[in-house]
Image (cartoon, rainbow, N blue to C red; front, side, top):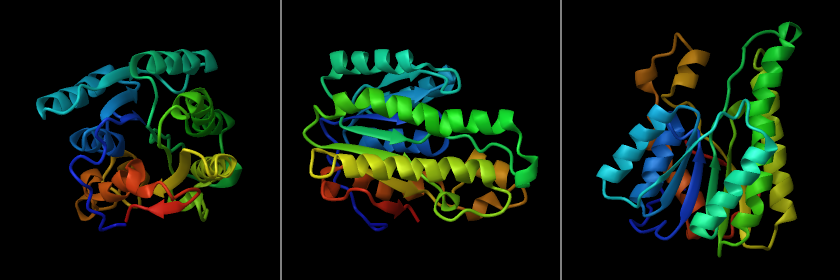
Length: 245
């Protein structure tokens, strides 16, 4: 799978929503999906960044993307319901959803966890994912083959010291994926998670400030697993914890 070679037209006629699409892995995934034929819905909080990704996709001659500016920290359930209705009206169905947006929170001893910080992390990494997924499931069920992909982490599969806030949120993400995968087993909807691994992103640099970022793979270099899960080659894959490296 890490060596997966996607057909150029793998995602043609598919509509895929990517959260955190303005930067890092989300940006790379959105552009990659578009270059393989998908119409991509770019969701993020910074309009300027989303517009920059939009321009790259448009200049590459890919299907025209859509932009949804939304701050996951403050969005309400009604915001997601309204978004789902708009997507259904404009596209008829949704073929893919990549939950990529995440907050790192504060690294440190468990006894020093700030409730304000952990509440914010859970809001973005878990609560927002629940509300967005819940709102979009009916629209995804209208797709011939729909793929729901959650972004995990190594500490979402085996926690380690000083990563409490982030690890707890990612364990919750894995649980969410497994619950949905089991609930929709045998249907047209599949759910899986990806651990991107050590990647050259701003979040990674924040977590490991002394690390040589040039030694890490770029987001563009880890896209094989993302393409595999979004395309129809993975229709039998459900409830799996995959790695991008």
